[in-house]
Length: 308
Image (cartoon, rainbow, N blue to C red; front, side, top):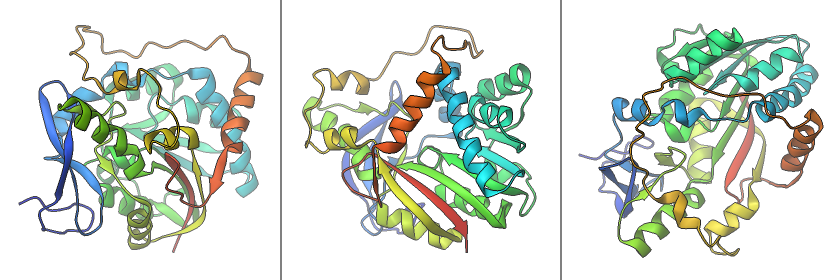
């Protein structure tokens, strides 16, 4: 029986389309009739997710990520001069490396991908754990701040992850959460399937697509209160809804790629040649173009949370 992992409903979900993460392993994209969350059915296995998150997935712009960390360090310094921060889904660690370089905060990370964790540990000397958050063994109220950037939509049990976050953040702590607007995010997958009559590839690895009202309920039940909320990536969101012209080649991103023939499992990355001023401007621009609240026309949500 297909039971919704968000609300526990055992009512048959509504079929929307077919989608995949790996070549030859298609899933139904369905919507729960009770909470309206959309998800892959059946969910990809732990082994499938490990295969998806290969070294090639973690091809990030080091300069920009470290600049984002430097900008975030200013926010942390306004909260308190020092503390312990955990980045859930830290990838290669460039973001928290930027925080470490520009503040007195102690930074820690956790990520599912072994190659990314190895890089963060060996190349950057960061304190990073590999595996699932609820299995990491972190102590109750261990962290002053949690940074959870585009993670919940990737995991097999979002509710468990949010409850784990509440357990390990201090009562006077905060949590930053970034997550896609689920119905907007899934719209291209459905459009591709309806037009091409075959499964669409989920390029970012999203397997849950959570709408705003469901997200608010999940956070409340997990023990969090929304301090502030914004919607960003407005142009992409409008494209997904058909309110802005689609790019001519938009379907290319939803074509399932062939398996990589590379045997390399290492993350290969270099410092970007662009000056730091470019990244400061890019971060300022991204933060400027956003709308207050959780709006349906934007692709992504950004929330600051406090424990209840």
